[in-house]
Length: 456
Image (cartoon, rainbow, N blue to C red):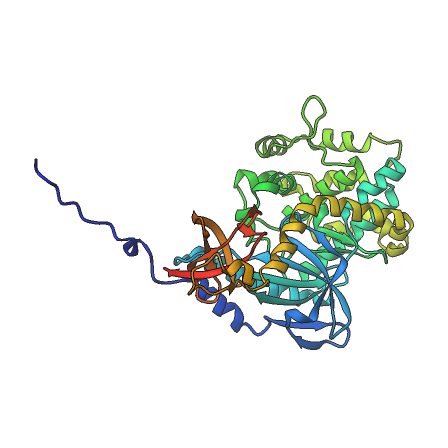
């Protein structure tokens, strides 16, 4: 029998030596604005130190896309919100990922340029901490979605004066965006925040592009606010797309939920069905359905929403919105007092309950992650299960657990990514348990072991 000598495969031939992750992190850390916090009104600059952040008792704010926590920044005595954006890891040269990270930096800088605006969430700083981008922002009390749900529960409709002042605040934010020639790209109730002082502000600048590839679980909630021309790919994204999103948002406030329903009246929860609904949308029918739900007249609001949901070429721009009867009717009213009239302590309590119930799984995973990965060296009792020359090895947060790669009577080996060496390593431990999050597998049990291999 003839033996065919096939060439052996070498794993090294398939691994590119360049690491985009290392390049990206070095680039981020060289930015002047990174790892610095600046608070108003004195604009004093504080260097970033993770130990200056004291997690508050009600510290988990949201987890729709990523973790948001409430902290006390001890040196400044400021209560702030910190959004943890997990930076995707890739050990190969990845120009697309590098460009996404550069866009993240650029959009953070744009957000910093909006510090003059009273209608945009204040950005205090952008920091990098062991695999996460920490976006430090002004703390608000609830999202517009949480707010309108409370209002509908209490009043069974959404009052027109409240709708008017919310609309004026969003349009005012559009004007501030227009001054620096940018568009928001993701207008929806979850990205509009309210505080107990009655202030209404836009949020979510900077991380939206980075997260585009990770939106599988919330894509319906995002696509629902896209205009038809964006789905058809006929036009580049411009300010008129934000106007459409505003129209859908206002219709949602009136209706009490997204008004996209099947023939049985059930809300559409399928991405493709939502897109088909929007592309064949009859604006007049949608507006009639939303505004006929209650006995309120909504005299000026109907025409305003209908114009926002018109064809792209007929849709108003930012300046046109300022001339509408609906805007002019409410632009001079005390917005904060009107919002406060409908926001009471029960509204804040209901919002907190919803937030905690929706965040509990991610809360447990993330607090285990923070607590245990800064954990303990193996105890003497556990060390006896290892070889005599084995040493207890503490796993700090620089190691990102990925998957179990082997097991035996002495324990398992775990594949992890080393954020400082920019390579994969294997860690031997006693027992590991994995909880899957939207980002990766993170250990939530015995998070310490022994470094046994460095590979890659």
